[in-house]
Image (cartoon, rainbow, N blue to C red; front, side, top):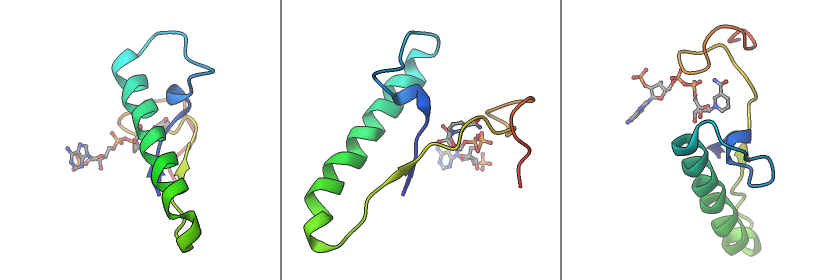
Length: 66
Ligand SMILES: NC(=O)c1ccc[n+]([C@@H]2O[C@H](COP(=O)([O-])OP(=O)(O)OC[C@H]3O[C@@H](n4cnc5c(N)ncnc54)[C@H](OP(=O)(O)O)[C@@H]3O)[C@@H](O)[C@H]2O)c1
């Protein structure tokens, strides 16, 4: 299970944080490729996009950390 983010979506990309977006787009590819390779063996490879969370990275304003 990988932790990605909406910043890695090619469809939603429009600038702002290029290093972050490129790394998450790469992570999305590194999720989908092994997911396709390993599906037949019953291995799930997936990623989650948590949305805005008030962590050190996310800063104030996001959802409180549970
Ligand atoms: N926060 C958001 O709004 C948000 C939204 C979408 C996606 N995400 C994604 O969620 C994931 C976690 O983000 P976060 O908000 O929880 O960030 P965070 O509060 O900054 O925490 C980052 C974590 O990564 C660890 N880390 C950083 N560099 C590392 C390294 N080189 N080797 C090993 N561990 C390392 C840190 O360890 P230390 O504490 O030991 O430094 C920390 O536990 C990230 O992939 C982020 O892109 C976050």
